[in-house]
Image 1 (cartoon, rainbow, N blue to C red):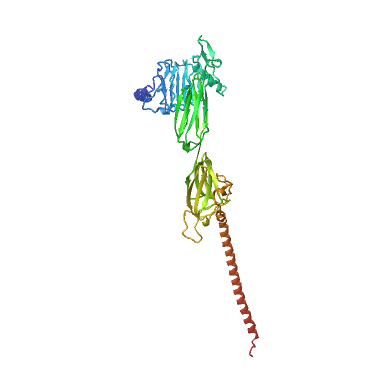
Image 2 (tube, rainbow, N blue to C red; image 1 turned 135 degrees about the vertical axis):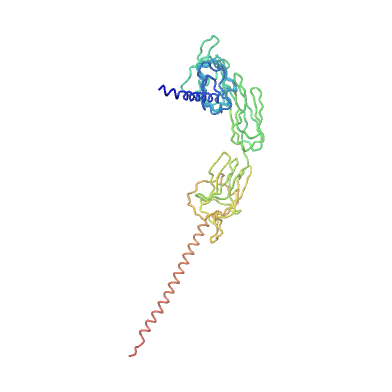
Length: 475
């Protein structure tokens, strides 16, 4: 053994030295503080000696977006989380700082950490904590046990949060009153400290495209709340004015794209927030945004997309005459998206008699739109130059059940009526009937000619036989 060590000892030492050097380079690359350990997705700092005085940050050579968990414990000299300490960890989900000296968290410390789900600040030195730190987060857990909170309106939001939680795991939270006595947070009563309210005074929010509208809002509460508008992704031009507890929102040149959007007036103070919301309805003339040549699946379909509010009435024209829908030709709506309708004119077993121009007219009380396409389903019988894009294929009829998006009961008053559609629906049957009858008649004629010819040959043959037997034989 001593001989083996004598020969291989120096090599093993060099190997261990190389390993420690690699570990050192790895730690340096991750730029971990002395009291922390780091991996590709986790940072944990639990060694109290020498400890850390600032929130741990990684070197620029490492991508902090991959960090999903930061665990800090026993760091008595860590007192502050600044606004830019956590912003680089955009993928952070779990943040734990326990048994440490944390006293202050900047209001915008977690502004860029929208993935945060769990925060644990157990047994720190926090005396106050604002709800503004967390209002934009969808937290499933916020643990604040063991902090010396001061009994004030600043922490009433924590009590409100506890009261509104559906989970039975309520934390035993306390605060220190002016006499340094622990008061259960659940029993805390602070005068003039409550949730605010918002009241949105809005006119009828059904408006025509291109018009303007003004919304007014009043907020109340103590402490006095601030007011702001949440307009989401509103397309129309808008501006707001706010004066103390009153505000107005002016929306001009309203776009049809904003129909169905929600607009909210929000009141917010230290304790929490309240909001009052309305939905915007925009009326506008129909627009046919899509109309294409027919495609075939189980049935033939002329696809279209129509926008309009109120819901437009649809009418099809075939070769400039009104198309009366039937079970063979009908409009079907497949997808409705608020004021947008996606569907098709469905045709069952169309033939060459259905080739032609199809025009769609969409109409409501604010106007109308129309578009036309040419449809070719199959070539004429005997025409070798049929379009290969429209093969002569007959599809099974799987049934029809839908009507169009407009009211068809009074359509005769809106559009002139003819029998073109019914003829188009019956023409395939008529063609087949004519072909069958012609075939039967032709077959009968062939049979009759054959029988006549057969009868003629049979007659001459018998006469010859009889005359042959009547001739007397000589000798």
